[in-house]
Image 1: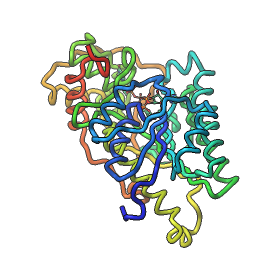
Image 2 (image 1 turned 45 degrees about the horizontal axis):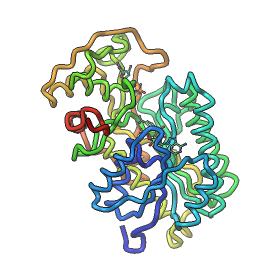
Image 3 (image 1 turned 45 degrees about the vertical axis):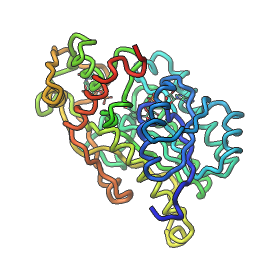
Image 4 (image 1 turned 120 degrees about the vertical axis):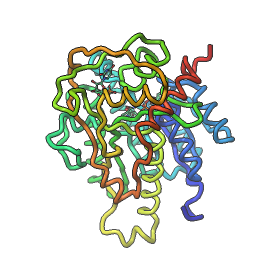
Amino acid sequence: MSENFMKNKILVTGGAGYIGSHTCIALHEAGYDIVVYDNLSNSSREAINRVSTLIGETIEFVEGDIRDNELLREVFALHEFFGVIHFAGLKAVGESVVKPLLYYNNNVSGTITLLEVMSEYNVKNLVFSSSATVYGDPDTLPIEESSKRSCANPYGQSKLAVEYILEDLAVSDDSWNLISLRYFNPVGAHASGQIGEDPNDIPNNLMPYVSQVAIGKLEKLSIFGNDYSTIDGTGVRDFIHVTDLAQGHVAALDYLEQQTSSEIYSNTASPIGFLPINLGTGKGTSVLELISTFSDVSGQAIPYQFASRRAGDIASCYASSEKAKNLLGWQAELSIADMCKDTWHWQSMNPNGYTMS
Ligand code: NAD
Ligand code: UDP
């Protein structure tokens, strides 16, 4: 990064969460100045404390809700932000089916409030946390960004709704630069073992479930379906290490900076507008393959049983990662073994997550 670009200030909404906390470290290492804004509805202050310890600096943290227009305005008035990385959102698919209004209010209305305040303060650069869930059940693999979008649950619909809003915004005013990063399956933890994924309840996702079985908190894993047309009958996903994902955000911000710097911008045919980019490894791994690798690296047995398919699940999902490579110069580096090793390290150092007991 050139000297001119050092220390641009970024607002990180949801920065106390799983992906946000890892990204804060990557942003700090890349020379960005950050302010974290989070209502701690699904995270804890301890995550912020640990990130501060890891980077050797106290993170500037505001406890607040993205739907709180007044507090957001205070924060924007106080700081000169280059842009926003917007992680804040609720993410539990099952809960979204039971509480759709909560999800639309938090994820969609919250994002609108954020965009309104950004507009008021003329901060027009945004990196949004989208998801591979916007592709629904894909027609072809690997999934390209131009694939059709459709999803069946309120969580996915809230991500899709925000993408449509961002697209309309970019059409309405070409000074907006809006990158929508569509994550595949983020897993793993920081190599230090100090920060990681800390589910509130019994995990819904595969990797945290497997690691809690490995440590003996849960008895056995139910594998949802062994009759898919995949390599071994179990579901196939594109697992991506959260550290690689964090680097993807740095690459997206660096790209925004380059494209919006006056010299390069004047030579660019069109502004960024709305730009969707997949963040995945491009490789599919089955549930059984993941369990086997986890067992190897942890030295723990992972008891499992086959159960019926989970409603709404698809057989296979993995990314085309070409666009991220070509535009952002980013690609995932870490292997499935690294993902399992770092998850296990975090889990065994913090059997109760951030709750110390
Ligand atoms: P997370 O729950 O750990 O982090 C989200 C953070 O946002 C939490 O710290 C939470 O307290 C905060 N938050 C929620 N609503 C808020 C509000 N109204 N105001 C302020 N803060 C609020 O989740 P994560 O796994 O780190 O996911 C980050 C983002 O990435 C989310 O938007 C999620 O939907 C998206 N995403 C996650 C995955 C995944 O598998 N983890 C996959 C695709 C997309
Ligand atoms: N899965 C499973 N048992 C579990 C959790 C998940 O067999 O307890 C399977 C699930 O059916 C899917 C894969 O693991 O095939 C990944 O599921 P996850 O919920 O982690 O991600 P998503 O389905 O949202 O991509």
